[in-house]
Image (cartoon, rainbow, N blue to C red; front, top):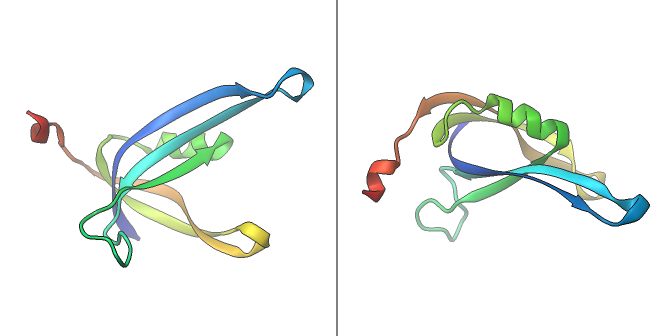
Length: 104
């Protein structure tokens, strides 16, 4: 498993559509840093991952301290055109990180 630094998240829920087509959109958007930020990247570029509905509840339940270091769990999921896609599917807490001292 790969270690990631989860820097924060936004928990969002809102109503979309009108009348009979109205539905609740419920998701969380996680911001994290990983060791590999891409071929042309310098430093650690942030990544954002969105989880919806039941997966949202599962992911939020695994977060113990933000910001914090977590072991990232990856898994194969059906993606566009039903082709296999490697996705972040879970996190295991490793340790807390104090970033607040950087902003004093």
